[in-house]
Image (tube, rainbow, N blue to C red; front, side, top):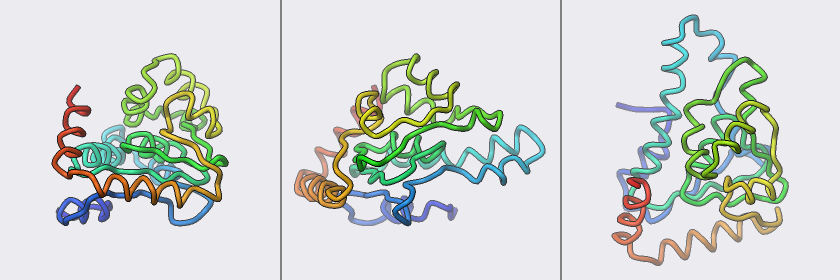
Length: 185
């Protein structure tokens, strides 16, 4: 079955060593789902199905036998924040902003709350982000556990490339087993 997430489908079927997720431009990693499209759904079941895609992508990232690096520049909001945090490594530019603004529309980001809770290890942090809808700068995201590392904007690509090159040089079997061990805890 074809999905909207061709990169993960393609990576799963090829001899890849590392997968880097990035936004299409410089303004955002991802602002999440099209909330106007979501609000057009009339039933709760239709809305739930709308978010199933995000859950499938997060599960696929964790089951993918190679490390996944999120290269975060600009906004990582809503489902985009969840995807960035769910990646194995989250490398953020200093100017990046993370947040879960769904509360402003009367919604809750339940699908991405789980990976954010696993990353931060704190219900208090998740409640703060989910219920306040506030955005956090990259340095705070690092302190909270949402990012692996934060680098100057001008060094973002170099840092991601260095990490990807390092990971690609390691044993694919060991990396796959390491991911399996972590994600089955």
